[in-house]
Amino acid sequence: MLSNNPAITVIIPNLNGKRFLGICLDSINRQTFHDFSIIIVDNGSVDGSVEFIRDHYTDVQVIEFKENRGFGAAVNEGIKRAKSEYVCLLNNDVELHPNFLKEMITVLERKKDVDYCAAKMFNYYDRNLLDGAGEGVFRAGVGYRLGALEYDIGIFDHQRRVFGACAGAAVYRRSFFEKVGYFDEDFFSYLEDVDINFRANLYGLRCVYIPNAKVFHIGSATTGSTFNRFTVRLTTRNIFNIVAKNYPISLIFKSLPAILVYQVCWFFIILKRRQILPYLQGLKEALQGLPKMWRKREEVLSRKTISNKIFWSKIMNSEREVMRSILRRRKNNGKAVWPIRIYMKIFL
Image 1 (cartoon, one colour):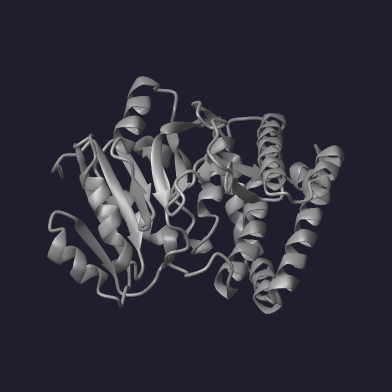
Image 2 (image 1 turned 135 degrees about the vertical axis):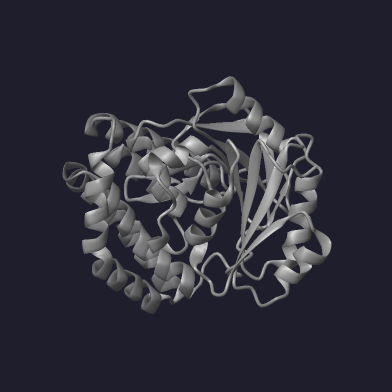
């Protein structure tokens, strides 16, 4: 039941996602927690998305952009319009378990020291295959959804603190954005949630993974592929943006060997996929944007509430968790694990 004065506002950015919206919105309307409202921010869709929403979901508030302004601009506008204590961010290509909102709100109501919550995400088509169980990070500035492509065999059945949340299915207190700020619109798309997770950790905020808050994710609904020119260019650029914006100088130098290893691996993947031109474009844009990110970095670090030592410890602990997840996945799939073991031996 949609509410005029809701406890939580569900915000969904959309770009030509008409074919997924029915699945997503119907699952929201089946929630056992009823005190919510829905805002869809449309990024200039040309597939009839807006008309579809207004014809079939009349209680949903639609904010229309005339052009695609990116993920960050879309969700930021929704967050600013929301008046509720809690904000739920969802991708347009997810289906929620009926208890999703109830599980999230219950934790936030009971644990006042928790600032935001990560969901247990599954593959939409194979509902025993995990798509993510909280967000981890590499010190190279890259995010990783813990448990991704692992089968759900009980490893991720327990509530626990994690580095951050995937913004495709997460719930935040409104105070989170008052403390951390909004998503960085200069990223446009990809890794904005990784960036805000870094800031949240710098400011001492807590994210908890909720295993009973389940979603089923179709994946790459907007871009059409997990690996294309658009994703390669923006991912390459935004990896460097994250490091430049969020890392103290000492930690940049401390991370350089791991950054180099990651970039070499990324480059070989790029060569294999024949995406060298967008990769080089991403590097060029990162260099061009470095002065702006450096200015943002001064503001970010001026507000941090933890020491560099604690921040580094958080990053390293998260990377260990990421590498263990990758090691399990590769072992279960019969792939070579020796590169992961060597990396862990040298760097962890």
